[in-house]
Image (cartoon, rainbow, N blue to C red; front, side, top):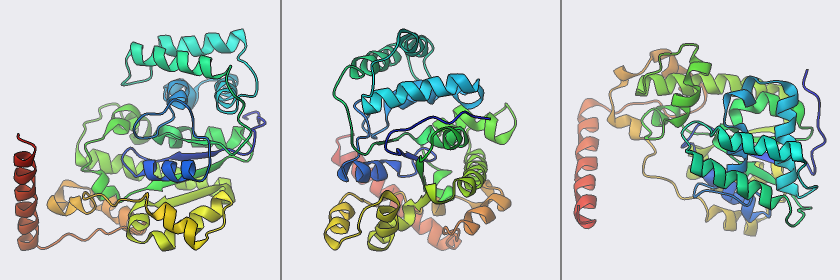
Length: 310
């Protein structure tokens, strides 16, 4: 059984399959005054969390090691206390063993940033983080950190199957799909998406009111309707002015509905059915309409290349 830690001011975490739209929710947290970290990439991922937790031992290592990692993370986020010598060694060990898909130089920079920040200004306000891989260790976090609130951002799994970003499938696919031979294909990507969301929903039921699932598709389509429940979850009044300000952060991508350009036969019918049960569009256009969509996209790509001088 995981030992429970004291967590200052009930943090808020944001996660999801890569490319699900977690960045816009992180931007909303920041706009509301949440401290989301001092070492962020362009997607607003908290890179301190990445170096500490984007690794197999954070998922299934000893409970005391997991607690030690979160204590370090809490210290750097809240500035509560300087790191102990043992905690500094832990951070250096993480730097010496970079997370999957990150190089040693990147890892060393994150470690130096983390250690340096722990001697900085104390943060007494609301805090949280966004890192898509958070969902992988959500069960451990939920059991270990009292008051943790988690926002899972979900996007239509059919569109996700054709995303260029399949990092999580490559890193965690064997864990969620139960076999080692993971081939990066739309079919495997959708299988991963389904497995992740079955797991997340199960954990979310255990977390109860501390869990919120946000549909990125619906947030883009109707922010005036979707923002109030998010604000309520975060403890903010959904005033018209606040909703208007936050709506400006939401920019619907052109890739919504991209699955319609690909044959339905590439994907498992059972997985498509699960996408439908999650409330997402799973209707393919007719063959004639699909051909027209492909031609439109092809023309758009050629025009874009010409404008950029390619």
